[in-house]
Amino acid sequence: MMENTKITLFYHNKKALENQICNLVKILGEKTVIEKTSGNNATIIFEKQSDAITVL
Image (cartoon, rainbow, N blue to C red):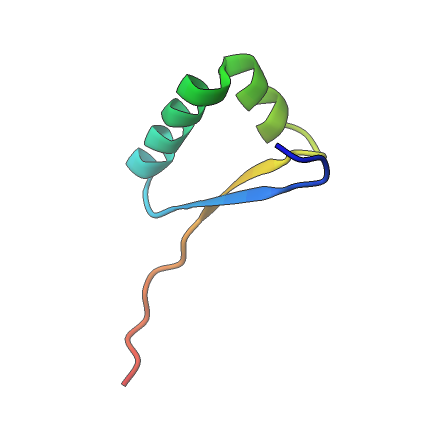
């Protein structure tokens, strides 16, 4: 990953969040995921996706 890059991963429910974290751990390793998602300088951020709204 390039320096100064921030990644936002959107999830729609708790199960999706769990799956995303598990997949990241498989790819990057547990230590790296903890480092990149923790603290004020986190470079990977999880954000709950807003519910869909109906447009008429």
